[in-house]
Amino acid sequence: MVEQTDAKDERRRPLSRERVLRAAVELADERGLTALSMRKLADRLGVEAMSLYHHVSNKDDMLDGMIDLVVEEIELPKPGDEWRTAMRARAVSAHDVFARHEWAASLMESRTNPGHATLRYYDAVLGCLRRGGFPMALTAHAFSALDAYIYGFGMQEISLPFDGEEEVKEVAEALLEGFPVDLYPNLYEMIVDHALQPGYNYSDEFEFGLDLILDGFERLLVAE
Amino acid sequence: MVEQTDAKDERRRPLSRERVLRAAVELADERGLTALSMRKLADRLGVEAMSLYHHVSNKDDMLDGMIDLVVEEIELPKPGDEWRTAMRARAVSAHDVFARHEWAASLMESRTNPGHATLRYYDAVLGCLRRGGFPMALTAHAFSALDAYIYGFGMQEISLPFDGEEEVKEVAEALLEGFPVDLYPNLYEMIVDHALQPGYNYSDEFEFGLDLILDGFERLLVAE
DNA sequence: ACCTGAACACCGTTCAAGT
DNA sequence: ACCTGAACACCGTTCAAGT
Image (cartoon, rainbow over all chains, first blue to last red; front, side):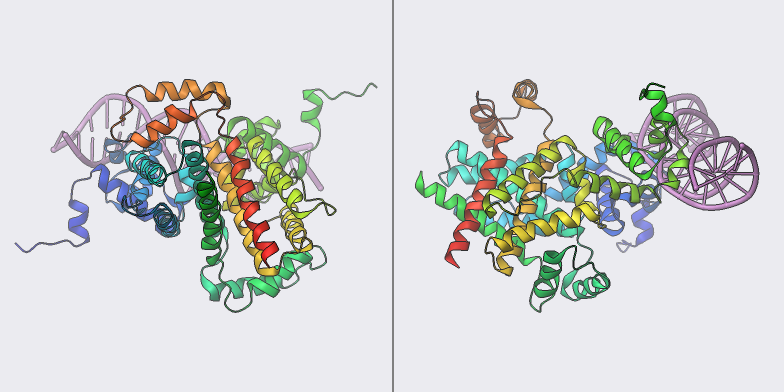
């Protein structure tokens, strides 16, 4: 009579779209998007692959659903906050979310079927800028620039072959063995004299660029 | 004895890594990355799939090679040009290249094995900034911000379900049939009162954001 | 040296059949 | 209503065999 939630019971619970999507996100987080097959996902849910098709119409539909689940994690700009505070917070939050779900940034931009969470997110961002006094054209500029930057940075970051400050050094030092300094002198200088110096952390670059863009729009807004 | 270069002769020419990669880029351009399989590529080259493995070690290696071929098309910053002119030109060129090869931006950021063209491209960009008077830290900031923006914008753009001004309107108007205005009022306003107005062209947003970022770095540079 | 046929271990998806 | 077994048309890749 005690409530049981161990793995066996979990497996016995009936499938639902929600449960399928959550398991898919989990699998993609753990093993990457290429390891996410309908068959392996079914396996993890203790079910046959074909059963999944009762809850998602196909793999594309499933990917769309996964994206929407991830976007739900992004902190929406709070209606009371000043536009700059709110935009900064949502950008940092989006960046965190993309770091938690490394497969998401690239997938998000290649899908063309935004779900409810995505539409609500976009709407909230636009609303925040408009309430902050942005005219229509400037709102479009800011939306486009910030979004491009946030996704672009997220993708850049996950393509780096390391996590954290420690690992950077190991990887870089291995890579620099036999590095053709004469061919790429500026790259060499950047890595050795800057990126490998103590205190440098690539992920700090995100907020630097973000603030630079926000500064730019603030300047344009007061000039209107 | 006349030189013949029709399809049949083309097919009979021996395979080479170069020829495989060029055909792969062509196929991805025409039919998208998901349609690029080793088997279909072999077909197009008039050969069996297994023959490709004499020229690329596997599909990953092939993807790396394709990226490098595409990066080669990006105009390198000219050593004589002032940093801002050169950075603007290379950003616009990169943006053009990603528009020509829609599959490339997302693929580029997910690969971790940069080839010669990619390393040379990065090196040239860094060199341009350094020669322009950028201190090391600011060079890293500018490189990171510009790259994130360029790739991010490229991905955003290709995910839009239309090409050109005409088609925007058709797609948008179809989409707005039954659009839940009350749920997403700001999105609705943006689409109807701005994006669908004559003269609006999404791809113009690229240069707006680019100039804003370049402005920001110019300001920081003179303040140094 | 370069290409191939057959095979292996995978995919997504359909459909008729089971409970 | 929900799940499954068998099947289909695909994948990338290996390997021994052909020229």
